[in-house]
Every structure is written in structure tokens, then in C-alpha cells.
Image (cartoon, rainbow, N blue to C red; front, side):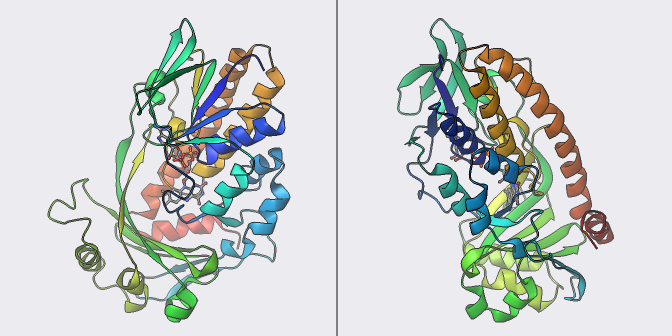
Length: 373
Ligand SMILES: Cc1cc2nc3c(=O)[nH]c(=O)nc-3n(C[C@H](O)[C@H](O)[C@H](O)COP(=O)(O)OP(=O)(O)OC[C@H]3O[C@@H](n4cnc5c(N)ncnc54)[C@H](O)[C@@H]3O)c2cc1C
């Protein structure tokens, strides 16, 4: 390949792109801000859809390995009333291939495989159209040039300003994440309530959601509508103060479900931001975006899937373009990405409105529409 290609970000988008390129024998420079793969906890679990994330892994030659690692039983979904009554309980068929779960850390390691990632390489700015190509500036003061720079650096992308002036805006919904370890032994009652997959409880403008990862690890999310400064009088680093504040917010809910908050360890504040539903830009030769950098949307099971299929598709077409017109290939890819991401952004925005809404029946109705009966 004639062009040097760099991808900023070693998340699902960047790694899938690099891994598919690797499969076709084209090296890509992966620039990742984290100092190493174990620099921070990898996060919870992801469901990978057959026609999105799994298709991307197939394009990377990793589908069999994914199937060996993934948890089809993790597709189980239970909805409870705030008083603890079970309202819905969906169980997947054995080995249901629709959207099995995989731990984020396992997915990252699967994609990393033989890739040579440049860890601790934080991109600060990208300047297209210089005489040498696209200029990339790094936090350590160094710079480098590439023929194509792909921004797969997530919600707060430093590559995005090279193509678009748009920035994410707050949805009005905040999530506070907590974790429970070894749940089957330490909290068997909660473990039974959550089951093999996910459990959600919907109240007025608030929800509690728990998702099981492998090894008895659970991530739980308290979600609620609130102004961005809801924590003005709260020290978010004070675990017990956050716990009390959340318990007060969910006052009146069954003790069984509040166990998620009572037993959760550290709390992580995650206000939900999104990019506009149809975020597009005038094509800039030499720079493009993938994944959350291009179309940040509410976390309703689509973001990583889209990031991965986009990475795989761009890699396939870039590899096929070879020494040919890479810019034309990127331009065509962007059109395809915008159309698909626009549809999902619309669906997930509408979904968030119904899941964290004044009328909890809306949340259940949404699940009834999308879950197989
Ligand atoms: C709680 C939660 C649950 C979710 N559940 C699901 C789910 O079940 N299914 C699903 O499909 N999606 C889910 N999502 C959404 C999904 O996590 C994201 O859409 C997905 O991770 C986007 O992938 P990405 O590669 O575009 O960006 P990211 O995963 O954000 O990766 C970006 C990478 O770039 C690196 N980086 C950032 N800035 C720089 C820089 N300046 N220079 C170099 N590197 C940089 C970061 O360290 C990171 O490694 C969930 C999201 C949340 C918050």
C-alpha cells in the first residue's frame, strides 16, 4: 500500500480496522492514548449482533474464537417493577447466535492478537492538507505525517475537529456505574435476581440496570434524568456519599433491587452525551472518523457493533483499493456509514426517551417490541 495509514484509538473501531487490514497484509499504525492494555479496567460486557459486531469479527477471521469466548446465555433479560415483582423474563434459546455477550477485555485481547499498538501515544491535533500529508500532533510534543488518519478515538475525539466543528451534547440522562464481584458467592440473592444476563427496573424518570459479565462480575447502572450539575453538593470521589445520594434518589424501591447500590463498590459518573442524530461533514481528504468519534449515541447496544462493522468495512475497501484511489474509497465509505449510523442514532435516541421516561410502562412496551416472545 502506497499510503501510511494511522488509526487514533485502540477501542473496538480502531482495533477492528487494524485487525482486518492486518489480515490483508497491510500494516496500520495504531495510536492509543492508554499507556498499556491493562492501564484501566476494561469495562463490562458487550452484546455483539450477528449482522454487525459478529460480521466484523468474521471479516477479521475471528468468529470461531468469539464463539468460544462469548456467552449466549447472557442474552437473558428480566424486567422488574420497583417493588421487586418480575414483570418480564426472557430466556434465549441454547446457543442463540443473535447477540451473545462478551467481556470488553476479552474482545480487546481477541482483536489485539498480533497487532503492534503504539501505547501512550495521545493524539492532540490533526492538520490535514499539509504538503507532506496529514500532520498528527502528540501530547509528548512529537509529530508525524500520514497519508490517511482515521479518528477512532471515541466520544471526545481529537481527530474530529479536522473534519467537523460539532461536539457532543448532554442528553439529560446521567448514569452512575458501580461493580459487584463474585456475586454468586457474596450476594446469592442478587445473583438470582439478575440471572444469567441482564436485569432492569424502570421507575419514573429513573432506572436501575444490572449486567452480568463472566466470572461472577456484575456492572450496575443507576440512570436518571437530572441537570448536568446534579452533583453540585456531592463529592463524586466519596463512595459512601454517592451511595447515600443514589439510595435517596431511589427511595421506596424494593430492598432486593437496591442491593445493587448497597453492595456496589466505587461509583463512576457517566453523564450520557450524544452527537446530533445525523452527524455528517464535508469530506476532507486524508482524514475520516469511525465509531463514537463519528456518531456517539445512547448506550443501547449499538455503539460497539457499529464501530466494529465500520472498522471492518473500511479496512476491506481500503485493502481492495490498494495503491488505487484511497480517497474515493474513504468518501464512499463515509456515505455508507452516515446512512446506517443515522438510522441507529434515531432509534437509540427514541429508545432512551422511552427507557428513562415519566411513564415506566413505555420502557416495558419498548422491550415488548424488540424482544422475541
Ligand atoms: C455503559 C455502556 C454500555 C454499553 N454497552 C454496549 C453494548 O452492549 N453494545 C454496544 O454495541 N455498545 C455498547 N456501548 C457503546 C460502546 O461502548 C461504544 O459505542 C464503543 O466502545 C465505541 O467504540 P470506539 O472504538 O468508537 O470508541 P471507544 O471504545 O471509546 O475507544 C476509543 C479509544 O481511543 C482512545 N483514545 C481516546 N482519545 C485518544 C487520543 N486523543 N489519542 C489516542 N487515543 C485516544 C481511548 O483510550 C480508547 O481506547 C456501551 C457504552 C456504555 C457507556
